[in-house]
Each structure stands twice: as C-alpha cells, then as structure tokens.
Amino acid sequence: MKLRKLGTDGPEVGAVGYGAMSFTNFYGPTSEEESLAVLDGCVDLGVSHIDTSDAYGMGHSESVIGAWLKARGGETPFTIASKVGITRSAEQRLNNSPEHMSAALDASLQRLGVEALDLYYLHRWDTRYPIEEVMERMAGFVKAGKIKAVGLSEIAPSTLRRAHAVHPVAAVQSEYSLSTRAPELGLSQTCAELGASLVAFSPVGRGLLTDHPHQAEKIATLPWLSSNPRFIEPNLSANLDYNAKFRALAADLGVAAASLAIAWVLRQGEHVMTIPGTRSVAHLQELVAGAELELSDETLAAIEAIMPVGWAHGDRYSAGQWAGPECYC
Image 1 (cartoon, rainbow, N blue to C red):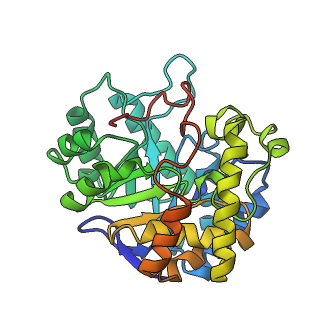
Image 2 (image 1 turned 90 degrees about the vertical axis):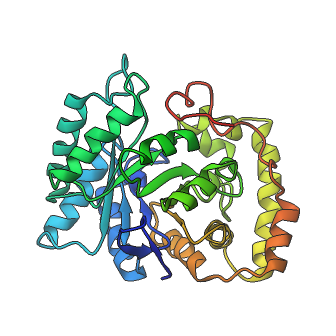
C-alpha cells in the first residue's frame, strides 16, 4: 500500500483508507458480521486508516469498530478518525455548541473504546458559531489529550484559511472523484498550500464509477440515493451511459473500474488520500488495488476524453441534502 502523510505532522497512513458509513444501512442492508469481515479485510490489505462519525447510524458505526477493537484486546492497527456536528434533532440538524461537542466527543471515545482519536473532524460547520470559536474548542480537545489532530469536512477554502489561522488543520474531507471535481476550484490547492491532507470521500461516485453501478430498481429502495439528482431520471440513464464508457476503458486496461477511479483520485496530488466505503471484501480488494496503479499521461488523457469535467448529469446533492455542506463555487 502506498503511504501518504496525514497532515504536516501526522502519521503516514495507507493512501486508501476506509469510510465506515457502510457499516450502517445507508447504501443497503448489512450485518455486523459483514462489517467485522471488512475490518479484517482492511488489515489483510494494508488499509491503516479508518474514518467514521457519530452520525453514521447515530453511533452504530463507531460501536462496530469498538466491538472489533475490543475483540482484539483493544489493540488497533488503524489510525481512527471520527466526526462531530450532525445531530439526531430534526429541529437543529447541526450543532457546534460547546456542550454538544464535548459530550459527543466523550460518547465517541466510549463507543470506540479508545483514549484519544487520531483525527477529529468538524463534520459540518454550524454557522451560528464563528469558525474561529469552533476551532478554539477543537484545539482545547487537543490540549486535553482527547484528540491528536483537527479536521474539517465539506467547507470552503476561505473557511479553511480562517480555521487554520487558529489551529493547524490536518485534513479536509470533501467529496472528490471523476464525477465531482469541485475541490479543484481552490480547495485542493489551499490544502496543499497549508499542509492539510485532502481526504476524498465517495471516490467512486456512489457507484457510478464501478463495474456494478446501482440500477433504478435498487435505487428505489435507498431513500438517500432515490432523492439524489444524479440517480433520478433522466439523469440516471445519462450517467449510466458514461459509466459504460468508463467500464470499457477499465476493461481495456485490464483493471476494475473502481480501481481505475481510485487511481485517478490519488494521481491528483501527493496530499490527496481517499476513504471509499463498501460492504464487500471483494469490492474492498478492487478499491485498494487502485493504490497500486501507476497511470500514464496517455491513460489520464483517455480518461479525460471520455469523462470531461462536468460530465455528470444532475447536482451532487438535492436542495435538502445541501443543508450543511458549504458552497464556494
């Protein structure tokens, strides 16, 4: 596994980490047994960074990881990142208050069964609180020894600069893939300048960049995808047409489409790493294989030719799903 530095002063971790939202039923039903098998697979494949959140299954993802660690006697082969800021409340979905953040961190540590988190993200910025004030809270968690580094998720480059002026930001998590390239409009560059890792989530486009993309029948059973513009007709059919071209190119190269998609993301800079999720060990193997692919300039040009910037039909979020992520372009 190729290694990438997690922030300027952080540990080296595998360029492909694991996004543990898949331990919930967000993209389809799963079981704790399947989730534990994926964690075993991560160890076998050299995946050394696990990313979760207290919002993933409202703590369930963290509990699964905690159970796996406990079964190993508490020893962990991973750096562990979690997040705070999204709540259970329908009235106030975002909460960056001191009381909420402190209680949420303690609850995450308890579920995971660890004394400190390697990386703690602000999952979403609650703009009722200045980002400088929120970063002071996060810095306090570092001083208290409860977290080792601070991250931000789905924020604008300008907000990153404001936050970084208060306390170093080790990582910024953002959706980034061949189908979502907004980070190229300033976020990736700012991360590189400030020494923060750009941690790409949904690097295979929520399945649109794989050999087995979700079809309409399956999408209808998944509440979040079935309301996402890219998975609603006529956008879905158009996006599946692009998927077919991408699959064909991957087949010509003798690799899985998911592997090619991961390799493309990692080619975008040494400060870029990625955290795909999956409920399948077999698919995990395809994702991790992307870290070993060396893409030539010719292959990159071929990818760009069939998937030019802006090819994806439909916004990446619906109006309701945009509640929380910060728009900057």
